[in-house]
Image 1: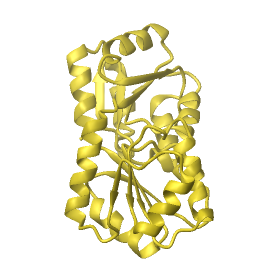
Image 2: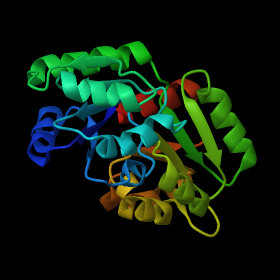
Image 3: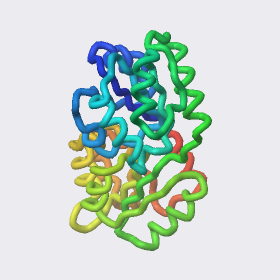
Image 4: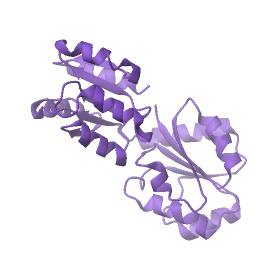
Length: 243
């Protein structure tokens, strides 16, 4: 499922926008009220940013300036819904031009089509986080996936949690049996994180570890794969988990 960030100067409009995209995208919302948007997002990396502007001031636009100057968000398409005056405030203060400018009263159906088109044109590879204490296994997983996904590998549960605090992957491959913090324990902590509540997680397990995986079903993993995993099966499972 693709991700979208909705930003608005108006709480009622923000709720309407959220309703328009609910169930179709993973959504993060941010109200332009002098708040730090980067802190609000907490590393959530969307496929599109939608900004609804109404009587925006130069001070209001500062958090958007910070957002578009951050290397993680610089290349993400931005849609600006604003009247002529608010468009002027945006252009005078934000270095990056919006990828699409529309009317504040644009219909939801039309807006969804524009978002879909921009995301399709962007073609950003999905990010997969692989968590395994076995260096050989990490190298193998990366070799399987790097042609199709952006792959990040870490060697422990605590390291994975630190990573997710800053950046949200589109899917997590999580080894079941690891020292210090095993797979189910790691997933439990991930589910308590704001950034980790809905991220699809697939367990990588040996035949003898199935009972451990089954005990974590309440944490809603997308399933498990028994090692050694075939490349085609792995890619198919990841793609299915992100639908």
